[in-house]
Image (tube, rainbow, N blue to C red; front, side, top):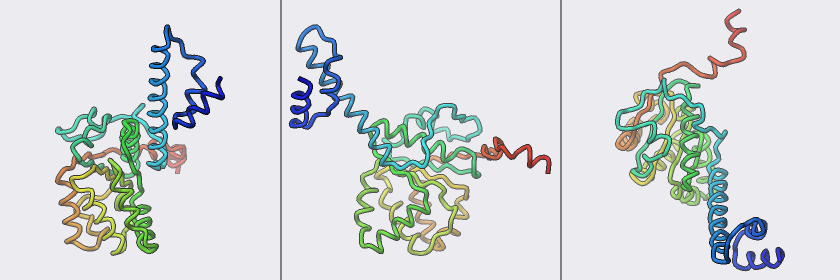
Length: 245
């Protein structure tokens, strides 16, 4: 029987999950049995899609909200912690700019939000900014830029981590500017950076392009400031050794 059900599932493009679990389903009649089979298939497909979206996002590490503290973050009044935890700002194509020193929890928060968005079965792409620029430059060189642009266009949320950590060349700056322009009022961005806006010109070299980029970003953005000290340094195993030097 199991082999026959598995064959039917394959023909109908249903999951093997039905054949694997039909014997464990309890029901009072065949109608309830059919309903539970279909509900099980729906939940299985949801879970597999979430798994696929998390994999496609390419998070560097998986970080959640569990144990995360918002105490040291300055959050604008127009945004609540619940908005961050649910990713509701994405519905309005709003952006988040997470500003503060290295190690203050910016990447952790960006990843946790991205993970929650994936769990809502929405598409996320996570990039370290320098890596994104390298991918854009390589795609242009290989004649595959349109393909990469289409991939980015399909995402509901783009996360650019470590924005401004490495200066960009002119071509890289122009390609990144194009990404930001294409996302404007169409999808949400999260940017983590340790540079204030006045120093962004040092990344892009072109003051006019920098001004235009900032104008697009801040129009629908919330600025979250991380004023604390680096969590990594505070919790470093070398802290005791450093204090003894």
